[in-house]
Structures are given as structure tokens and as C-alpha cells.
Image (cartoon, rainbow, N blue to C red; front, side, top):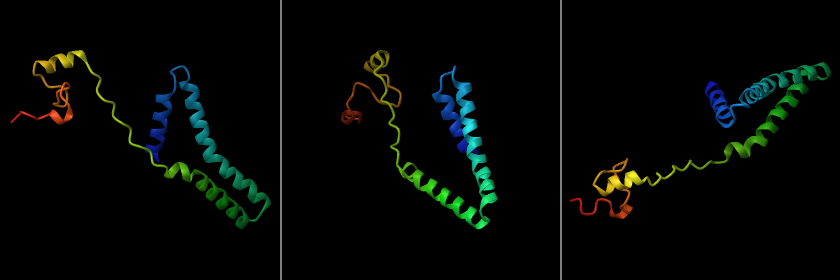
Length: 120
């Protein structure tokens, strides 16, 4: 649970502008507080008007509908983020021309099928 909160906070902080960060964090924590407290208040109000059995059935139905509504989002597979290809750096290309290796041990000026050819 703590890791989920940390990931949510990281996402909120990383995607907000510095000038909006305080308002965004306040909204994040307000939404979290409402998500925890409103169901409890709703059950308390329902208990004032109907029996505990009916209240629990209504609560279970609401939770079940919430899970069903969230299911498409929860089971959707996300593609692994693609690693950006290294930018062609003129200095790296020049160094490779003189025999130096690019980061990762590959020469940028060679095609993938040419790597290792003639290195025996």
C-alpha cells in the first residue's frame, strides 16, 4: 500500500509544473481522504434508515460495481516502454572512425549484421 502511494505521489509530482505542484498535491490528498471517509459516512447514514443486512448488501453491491467498472483499466496490458535509440552524436561517430567503441561496445557506423565480421 505504501509503495502505491509513493508511486502515485511520484507521478503527481513529476507531471505537474512547479507553480501548480502545491495545488495538485492538495487535490491528491483530498481525493485520497474522500475515498477513505465517504464510504464510511455512507454506511453510517444508511444504517440510520435500513437494517445492517441491507446496508451491507448495498455496500457490497457498490464495491462490486466499482470493481467491474475498473476491470477494463486493471486488466489492460500496457506495452513496455521503448528505449529511445541513442542519438547520433558527431563526437561519438568521429571516435568510432578512429577505432574507439561507442557506449555498449558497438560501433555506430556498422550495421547490426556487420558487427563482428572480420574480428576473428
